[in-house]
Structure formats: structure tokens, C-alpha cells
Length: 262
Image 1 (cartoon, rainbow, N blue to C red):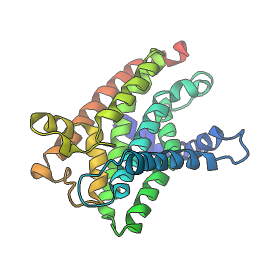
Image 2: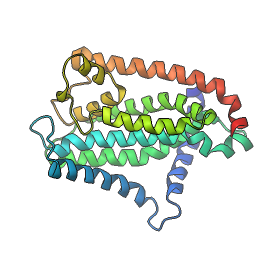
Image 3: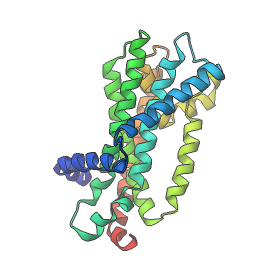
């Protein structure tokens, strides 16, 4: 509970520093923050062109590939960017840790806030694409999945930000792990390709829950939130809560050493 009290007490500071962090990423460019939105948008558009029109990959159902693909890729890019930035945030903000009295616990949240500007933009693009093709989203599902994403990212990065600070090499390992997670998550392939026990394993994967859950807002055939009486919803929240408890313990244990290793 200490983390949540600290976060609530410093919520305005975290939001303001998150905005500054986002602007500072592109401070030396003429177009500034426009690049932050343009780069992921072009990346997503390239994937659509390659997989739909060149490789002619179909979606799982009779709905357009764009409506199936963009929600999954948008959610993944948000999670990936937020996790990687938050994991390196304490090293990036080392001057706050070493030189002033600062609530170190909120530093990873600052990076998540910074990444959320692009992430929410990509979610908006996916939503507009769905509407353009006649697939009107369930807004409650969208809000729920965004909430799930923030909770999971905070839970995971409590651990990864602490470990990256103490063991810098972990940052490189995390990059590799996130690349593997992208291909093992049904973003460019669909869950109908696998059957049996292995299908249950993939559906229990937290990233699968977030991506398929976001698709469920647009596509009736995606039912991971409610499937098997909410089994995968229960699994997701159990994993998230346990991960937060573990990560929080690791963070608190190593927090006193951050200033020494930076």
C-alpha cells in the first residue's frame, strides 16, 4: 500500500514529468513530438500492407484484416514501449535519485506516463479504423483493457526497473525477451492456428489476454475475457497481483542501493 499512497500523493508530479519526458524525446527535432506519433503509425501501416497485400495473410474470421490486426499491434506497441522505457527509467533519471530527496517509487510511473501518449494515440487509431469499417467498439471493454494494461505494466516494471538499475545487463536481456514475447503473442498470427493444451497455455499468457481482450471490443469472435466463465480473466489478475507483490518486494529491498550503483 505504501507504493499506492506515494503514487497518489505525487500523481500531479508524475503526470507533469511524464509530459516533459515525452517532449524531451524529440526536443532536438524540427517536428518535435509529431515524430513520436508518426513513427509507430507508419510502422503499423507497413505491417498491414506487408501482411494483408503482399503475404496475403488472413484474419481469423470474415472481418477485415485491418480491424483484426490494428488493435492487437496497437496494444502491443504500447505495452512494449512502456515496459522498456519504465525498466530503464531509474538509470535515465539517476540525477533525481542521487542529488535530491525524491520519491523514487514513482520514477517508473513517469516513464509509463510518457509512453501512454503514443500508446493511447495508437489505440485511438485502431478504434477509428474499426469504426471506418463498420465495427463499432464496446467502450467499456476498451476502458477495462486499458486499465488492465496499466496495472500489468506497473506490476511487471516494479521488478524490471529495480533489476535493470542494479544489473545493467538485464536491460539487454529484457529487449530480447520482449522480442520473443511479440512473436509468441497472437499479434500477426491468430489463436485458431493452435489447438489443445498448448492453446490454453497461450491464452493464459498476460500479453495474449491484453491483445485478444482489446480485439474483443471490436470482434465478437474474440471472447478471452469471458471464455470458460472468465477463467483467463482470473488467471490474468492472479498473475498481475502476484507479480506486483514480488516486484514490489524486490524494489523495496534494492531501493536503498540505487544511489550507490548509479
